[in-house]
Picture 1 (cartoon, rainbow, N blue to C red):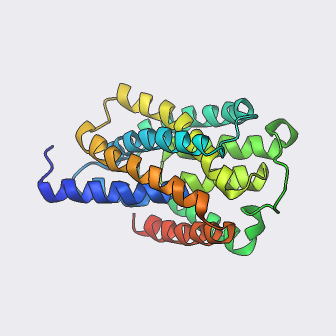
Picture 2 (picture 1 turned 90 degrees about the horizontal axis):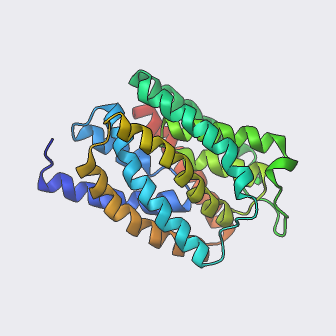
Length: 252
């Protein structure tokens, strides 16, 4: 399908905003997914197409965090094993399941995470100086990472929140490092999901690459903001974006 000039401008602007939001917290796909569907893509094609921008944005953002020394890699193998297993199953489910399943999964997840952050904010804000756990030390983190991959493979929207709960809540990384690892994790399961969607011919490349071009720029600026922001400010931004994600899920 063809996109007109105004639609291209809208995708470029939304891609930039989504890149910043995804880097600082999560939920950028709550902007890009509905836009792709409003512009005429079926839900399953929009879900697949959105992964192009997410994939390239994750590479750019993770590289930027690494350059600032904020990307911890000491336990990356332990993190990636459950995440990848979940990602494969989630992507296969998204590729074959009825699209009507996307909304309830998104809605339930977003509302649950909003309540967690509101009622128990310490989940996403470990005490300063907390030494992160390894996955093998915390069986609950293995389950959380597997579920994060499962959810992220199934529907991209809001997966950043799920990953932060796993990385900050279970493994006790601070919010900056959680955001950095979140991008690397997103890159992992998005690679799997995107490969499956490409094989199934479900990616619309033109809108996907248009979004990707500014999502990468947004991720670059988002990393700079994350490094400079106070932890308390990041926590409230995370909460606000989770609430917005819940609202978006309701009207998705």
